[in-house]
Picture 1 (cartoon, one colour):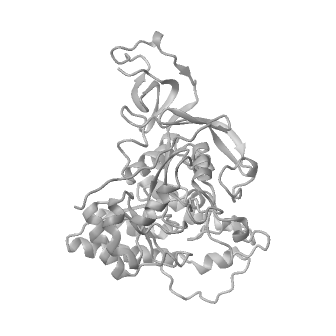
Picture 2 (cartoon, rainbow, N blue to C red; picture 1 turned 60 degrees about the vertical axis):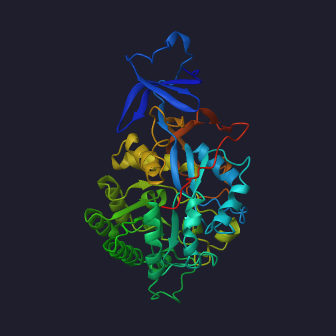
Picture 3 (tube, rainbow, N blue to C red; picture 1 turned 60 degrees about the horizontal axis):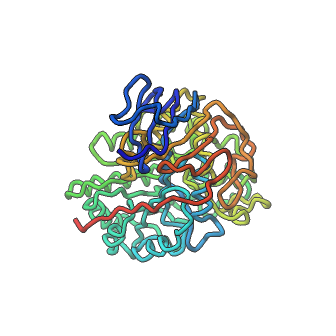
Length: 462
């Protein structure tokens, strides 16, 4: 038996939907065993020969998996980068991120573009990182090569993405893409909004309510209905594809999502901390840090998103960390209309969600399911990430769930130190983060050397 390199005991180790008192043993970067109190050790081991660290009532939970992060490197590293983004992830208890195919340059829509991203990673990953590819009209024929190069799945926009290099797809483009993706059995991520052009020319300026009105729920609802129809059409023709709606903001779409799933369609969805903890009635005019697309909606909508999570209609929670430079946010002018749309919160998502989950009546193991187990499964990583179980990567987080702290710009590790959560007091502090058994974050400091690795799915043509 290989030498045990780490042994942690906690009275509260997250296991499924509950806590157990147990000792977690790590060897060769993997979890060797989870020994519940009173149970014997694996043959050949004895407690008197182990250096077991006692965590007491501090929670030991699996490293979170954030499958929606815009790292923006190469090409727009003044917005973000792998070094800063993965540092912030580690500080937030996230041990795996999946990078979006924009707003990097080149956008990750070809195998060559993916290789350019991989070429700049050396020495920059503090946590493990997978990659989504992109589907745009001009590169659909290159999808097999992109998938075989190792992306975990692909993403499209049904509305302008914000950058011209990543154009939106039309229904006929989606019809071409779904059968290819179905053959590879990978998820097709969709930014689901349809611009009905009714609000073009409306003045927004610094008014948040005007911005909210300019992107109504119907834009999301109609796009999701379109995707359900296209999925049904493809399935009838023999292509049972997986479609995933990213950053769901409109709770009005939940009944359609539920009905589609009940009919047998492989439709999943996610939401984000900002949609689950912030609401439009409390957002002042001129506060551009709150702008994102789709927008943060009303409180009654927010409450129904929580119900969608509880009912399983919304599958999990991810950050949609979408940073930019402060000047692109137009913070000084307060011009919401001109500001880049995106929320920065990567480092604080666990504390933000845990704070609100307690108000809503949900447990910490439920939060772990939403932020670790389910996104790992969605990204195809369920054999190694998202659980504390034998054979899994030893991605572990020591979490003080009763501590509280105030989010401060001085503590931010991602590149541009801005967030709408600055000044907010939250519950739960990440004390330590282990990546494959090695300490990467402890008591406010990063380790000396990054040990994260790229995650690639190698596939053959089906």
